[in-house]
Length: 147
View 1 (cartoon, rainbow, N blue to C red):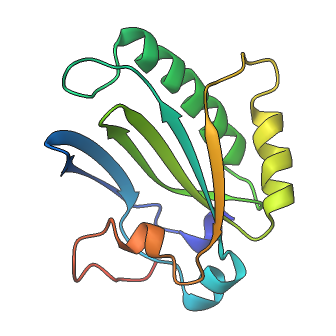
View 2 (view 1 turned 30 degrees about the vertical axis):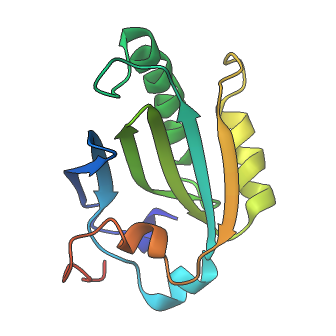
View 3 (view 1 turned 90 degrees about the horizontal axis):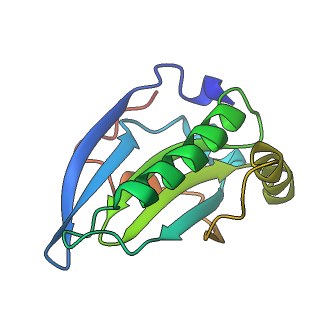
């Protein structure tokens, strides 16, 4: 699925939610409309944590979320069942956003990525998002270039 983002360009920014910083890493463009339509299923993976006063993860949470993130990024790196488009950290929550053509195949691959890992305190939510608003809402206005 990497071919829908051949440039594989990412940006990092900072937002504020409830007065706390949230670090946002996101793809800088959108794939062509046909690819967006084919991958209209949005999967949001959320990991709430206690964190420190600023809302960022403490060292233990950071280590656990990094282990989790490494596993899922490696598992979906060359996958045709899902593509990661964003990751946000802050306000006592870490969130990853993926698009997939097939939710069941995505979940099978997701579970395979985490085989042998401990049970993580994550929540998965699925939505139909044919316009890819969950990515475009993170991009600066006017950054609607296609990749």
